[in-house]
Amino acid sequence: MRTLSRKTQYTLRALYSLARSYGTGPTLIAKIAREESIPQDFLETILLNLKREGLVESKKGKGGGYSLSQPPESVTLGSVIRLTEGPLAPLPCASETAFRKCDECVDIRSCGTRMVMREVRDAIAGILDGTTLAQVCHRVDEAKADMEGAAHEQDGLMYYI
Image (cartoon, rainbow, N blue to C red; front, side, top):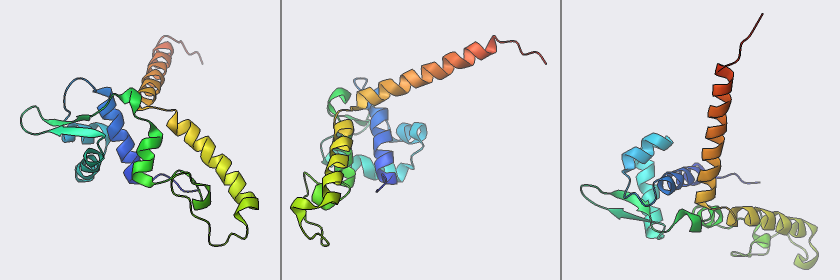
């Protein structure tokens, strides 16, 4: 199975940052780079690509920066990953958007590997197309709150040896 590229991982982190600040105005590249630990030069390239694809918009000058061009509730991880990585399918013959018969394939209709990889593609697409930037940010916020709550509980505990 292929893994997400560093570019895609950085893209998602930049979009999470913009999702958290959605509706508050543009965010500076330097702020996103610092908060998300993304090299600024790399982030500039990522944001320019996202702007070209219509996912983000930019404003120049004082008070400028980048912002999401649509609500974080409407941007799915599947759409972002397809933009940066291409099709979600592990094999070209299992792809919905870039179908191509595998060179080694004897009979595409009865290929067991293709049948299973279609199921894998469908499961991956189901999760990624059903998960928005807003949902991920909400899950992260909940996880951080749970960690903070656990840390506060430990503060009040007495340990005896």
